[in-house]
Length: 445
Image (cartoon, rainbow, N blue to C red; front, side, top):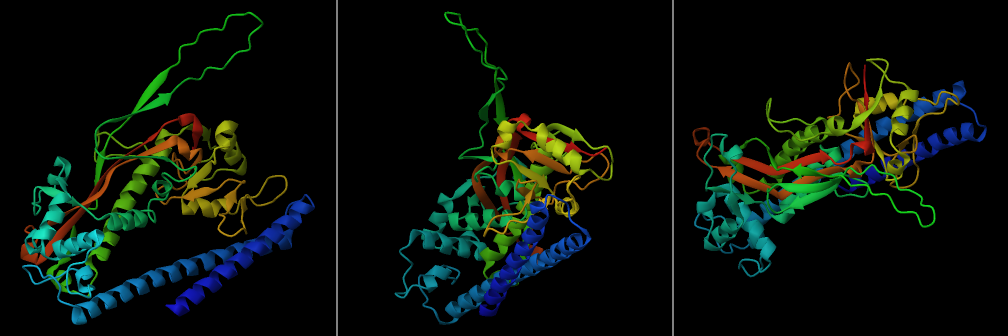
């Protein structure tokens, strides 16, 4: 692990050095108010390629560090299973991980640790494996299962699901952000507005459609009257699931496997990917059904590209300036996928020849496109006939609703003949563009 930390630090230092060299090439041309010459253009392209390779190595190293942490946790759990105190055993003979760490052999006093123990026992053996205290904990976290979830044709252990622990829900949401770049910004500065609610009841949000302009009055003149138009956006609560994750009895019975960590990873990836698609392009479960409004759908028309296979630097700038300057002062962002980013990195200004993509060598500051930050979301469409590969604007005018967090169901009987247990994570979400004037889209021919 120490070697990985050292390697990651070295790679990040190398990336910072490359960014410094990129900035030097850029500033050299900028200082003389000209475009790149042939040597500078070659140097710029080589440095960009080197930066891309270092980024890939950083990503791989961080992934290895995550696996190393998970392995260390599994080894730690195994050691506690072998040598820890027995604690307050359940009817199944299984004890929770926090109980094993108790020096006195008694259940931990920490309420959060007791909840974690209850979940660990429940995941491995179901509600019948829990002792009385753990059953009470689980029942306090039980909730009704929506018809849409029950319609999957399975029979859960109880009539309701269970809200996962706050710690576990936090890890799942954090993991979802790796796959849902737009949703990851919700509630962040200059990101989409976040509406967390305790129930899935209809959530009406006022929409100000007042496009009126004020007036200047002469002395003693009477002010004009103008009725304000106030619309309503209704946020619903659409159900999203991870689909059923099937886990073998062997894995559940293996005490040195962190089963919650395994399930959290599966739930985060599956929920993150479906929500990413909805936030980018919208959609619903079938034709004619209500849908979430994706950015590419809710954004207003900005620029229509002349070509079906490529857009130009001028068209990109036209898109930016289609957005009112008032919104461009609200921390606007570009949104596109990684293939489009690769194209944009090759763009240069028409007159000067300077690159549109600019590195930012300040620690922790992201690169920009024409001075504005960007979001790389892999569910944004590629450049192709009729697609919307780029949107631009104030993402704070996009709203995301999240209901109650994340809940889980355990299915003990459906896959019993395969010696497996099923788990299902589900959540309720909605998303809407609240002011289409603030976000514009680029549409290919």
